[in-house]
Image 1 (spheres, rainbow, N blue to C red):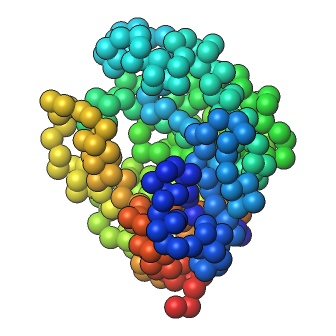
Image 2 (cartoon, helix red, strand yellow):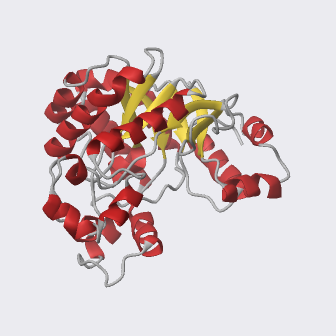
Length: 320
């Protein structure tokens, strides 16, 4: 099993590495990790840390099915004009052009020769994440994702595995065996699997009140996948106990929804906190992943180092 942490080469994070007076490589070594899962937004030829990158998290668009399906009613609700729509979809005004944007992102990701790619499977617009009144079902999003993937997957080498990540919005939530089975049966590639995000899975159960309950829920959900459990190749490991918030906030769209408001709201749902109890080891025992990605929120590398060590200890991967 390879241990990684999530990293994105943006100016603020690069400055943080300098502030810590470390290189990313030395930080990885200090934490006894094998490398990073890098989130890639850069164009082809500009992706750094090739020697440290084991996996790549692809770019994603939280709201995309309406664009893919050319649902003008929903698009008009979400975007004030064509320019705003084009900015959201990477300069694309139509699906054909957007497919080229996606292919460009895939080529940039593949350029660092990763072992795997991570593809989000979800759909939720800015209004939906507040109201929880979703325009598309899990089945709708899974079908559209399979179609989209099959349109671009020919450029992905056979020795690079595509791991589809679960979320708590409509899409791949991993709580319905039949939907998961149907989704993977509809893909035109065999080098595919699941990136199990434990925090995202915990967000699907608003009754969880403790880490132990969350761990038990994750393990039961994994076991309920039966034969499909073999598809889980990696784990994004974090703890998210947000049931009380999900049940308590008013299900209306704020008068002003900007990036900060949206990020604060989603951050209260998807906590990305480290596990701290020894029962966390049960998740790794249940899954036996090839890749363990410590995907945690952090203020700086010093903060991340402390949280990561805490989670490693909870998983039995560190003695102190």
